[in-house]
Amino acid sequence: MTGKVLVDTNLLVYAYDFADPAKQETAFRLLDELATSGRGVLSAQVLTEFVVAVTRKIAKPLDLKTVQKSVENYLSSWVVLDVTGFVVLEAVRGVREHRFSYWDAQIWATARLNQIPVVLSEDFASGSTVEGVTFLNPFTADFDLTRFL
Image 1 (cartoon, rainbow, N blue to C red):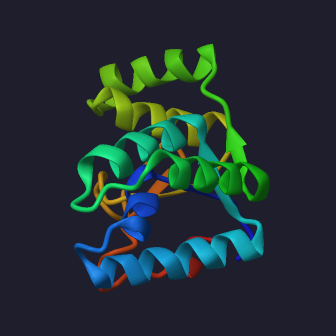
Image 2: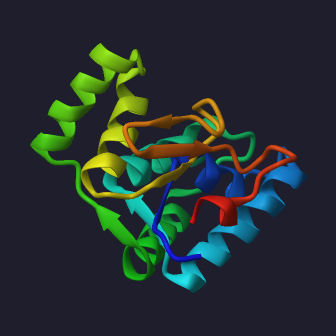
């Protein structure tokens, strides 16, 4: 793998959610691979959504001390991109021109403005490309990240 990959919130959440062991295993494997290779990228938005999801939305929510430690680990070992005014503006354009939901548009805008060619997420049409950003669902049977890097 040679390129960077922006990881969406759902991949992080599945790593901590015991409700779907197959997705949890896939999430662990991919996150480990991306962290080890240095190709994984997160955004401040993803970390924010992660905190909310794992403390409120999964069957066995995590306590805040555990979540804080997880966020500290991500901050120390992954590139974490800020949500800037330009990202917000580009996200608005993504909503207007590509009909994304706002939060999905912000993920797309972060990847596009930071020249990250691949987003791993189950929230977009897998294999679709919008203005140079390709979306891949890592939970599909035909998932193959190496074809896009």
